[in-house]
Amino acid sequence: MGKKKAALSGQLTDIDLRLLNVFKTVVDFGGISPAEIPLNLANSTISNYISDLEKRLDMHLCERGRSGFRLTEHGQVVYEATLSLLCNIELFRTKINQSHDKIFGYLHLAFAEHTLSLHNSCIESALKKFTEIAPDVEIKISTMSSDDVVTSVQNKKVDIGITVLTQAINEIETLALFKEEMLIYCAKNHPLFNHKQISKSDLAKYSFVESPRLMLGREPYPEMRNWRKPVKAHHQEARATLILTGHYLGILPKHLVINWGLSERLKPLLETTYGYSNTFKAIKRKKNSNELVTNTFYQCLSDAII
Image (cartoon, rainbow, N blue to C red):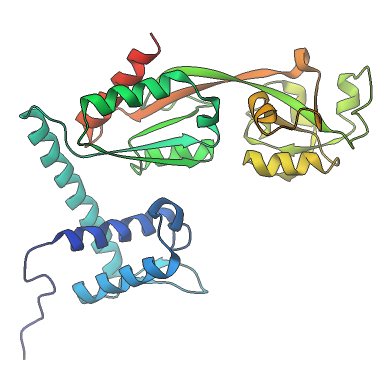
């Protein structure tokens, strides 16, 4: 019998680490297509990278195609080994950083969609100060839905998230940053647009677009639970589009309606009755491998809001 082929007989190279990072992201996001945005790579390029890794390791790592994405047994082993490898690399970076004048590594931030359009000075100030303190750290910023930010922090896909946290999570540390005003809107072609006096019972007669805060158990006001919500749009651009059809009412941030130039086409209803504020918080895991970099930026945020 011949000897079993050694897939990794030589040293790991930067290219190998790049391929493993791509593979990890594909697994984390559940497939090649969902991983296009976080990787900023085309579908075909990601597929080629996975194929290159399979050739390098002499293993079939995943099933991908019309039937969906699924890890093979070999793929699960490689994924778990990759998590361990990347964690150890980060621990190495942290130890080097702690014994050095400079901070090296990366910082991955995730913002809830349209958070940056608030132009809140604490984020800008924190980024400015952090860049001055740690100019050698590579910063990556991703935007996603509010709930996805929380999940990404929990799953160690990002270091710090800026989002609205609807409930306390034991392993997550939080820092309140700023607020946004949320209002119910109707479009110019909706029956309620020209009504001068509107009551709570008037709203209950019409359909709403379900947003994250209109999900069961998250409603800021109890009666919202009984409103009809035949359509869902948890991303704000999609929600605004549905509201603009005139068939639905829905909740949007006041600053977005203004920024998008929709103040004449969308009218807030019962502002003092159903208006509420979202508190945006910086969130991070209480224990993480990228501790020095993460804690340094977290402190920059804390200093910026004092």
